Image (spheres, rainbow, N blue to C red):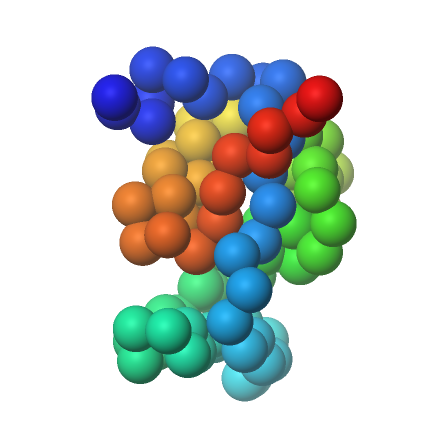
Length: 99
């Protein structure tokens, strides 16, 4: 199943354990202890990662990005969906199964 088919603005995401993130010159970098890979999340990606500190809906992440970077909702939504799909593909986040 393609994650793009199941993602919506109501989808709630959670961080997977085993990631260490740090700020470096205004951008977030992260080490995934499980796979040994480093990721440069960049400025926008860092904000998205920070928004994931607790289970959060994609719509809330879009709102944070729109407000933080003063971009149109469509731009924020597209950027968030693309970044979230890459986080899911790398198994850095998971879709929260709400009861």
